[in-house]
Length: 526
Image 1 (tube, rainbow, N blue to C red):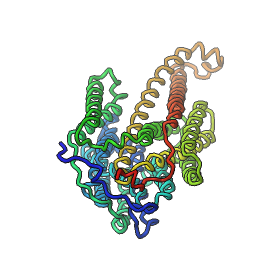
Image 2 (image 1 turned 135 degrees about the horizontal axis):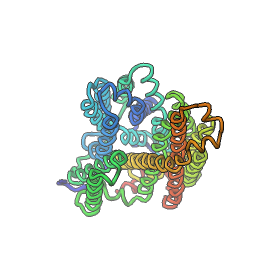
Image 3 (image 1 turned 30 degrees about the horizontal axis):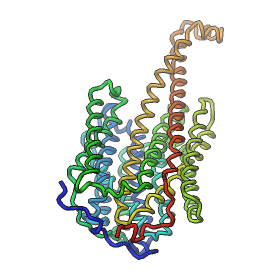
Image 4 (image 1 turned 90 degrees about the horizontal axis):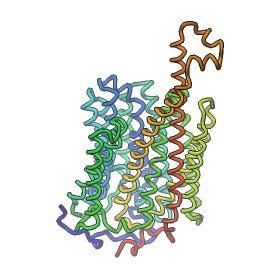
């Protein structure tokens, strides 16, 4: 339990107006190192997905147990993210960032050398813990080393890495797996991590150390709640959701722990997060938006690769290339949104327009058919990328512009956690809709496929197959399954479109900052 009070007076004094919180010698090179760490960490959330079948054979796992390679990383990272602010204050942001990178490199090497599923899961847990601190710290560094008037551009650069990483992951993972070995999915982090480590060791400054008490009770509640929620979402479809006692237990544990955490945050003497964070309307609204961003970005990334490969027959590399227009769209509007905000355009208008574009792209995806070529994938992906690029930078800018510098790390950990939870919920929901819609659609279509109906459609069809009527019906059933799966994917896109469109009115809760005030002494509470 906490033993010392958190006091606003303990916060470090803000820097002079118009200056960066942490001046550096070579901002360009440090930015490169920070972004390399960000992209490396984000890549690992998706790069291993395409290599799972190869890992399953090599590690002697089953189709059910191999998914723990992904689940262990996600759960470990989700539990560790909330303590980023406290650990950073306790040991220094520079030390924590360097320790995280070293830990990530070592864990990646161990994952690549794993000889059993048990070893792989253990090493992925270690990798997830190290990765948890890297995103919030990288976002904080990008804000701290830039002047208030340059922070919008800094967030645009940082957002590019966050958005492009999941898109490049399947492409790079597929290429490494096909041309080398699945182990290189992890070994690729070693040279990248060493380059990043050298740059940050040389140039990275540290935020002032703040001796804060650790809220053991609050963290325990949050860790249990998040861990149980992640397990419930990941295991739900496999265990048939609430038909399974396991899912009931995980749901009750998650709900109870999270409710107790909320009560503790509101009434506890020294809560885990400063209460002033929850009074910031822009930050709270941004957290809600980040969950929707997680749903749209990560759920779409989870749906499209299997659809393109199983229904349209594209190989892994081509699948990755068809998804890259999203990255192009993000690059275009990330830079554009920074310029528009700098010229006085209301960032709320950009956020609303971005969600409208994302909803439009999902509506366009509900019109897809099995007979179309590659162009619709490219167009819809580009539109969605344009929308995501308009959302991310202005949203982060409005949330962080109204926060004092000493709260940035905690706020960054909350936004990253919110996006991750949104992604987990989104992936779980679309996976459930996909499985159940496929079953329902197959049940609706299959009764119409009989030998008599086929003969009616084409009198010569049965004659061509002769006595192989069963083979013809099996072929017809395979096509029915394919059509049912396509209907299920369209239902998923429709559901995501509704969620995205319904979130647009949240823009009304955002408050436009009068100016970049992150370094304003009044905003810091002094």
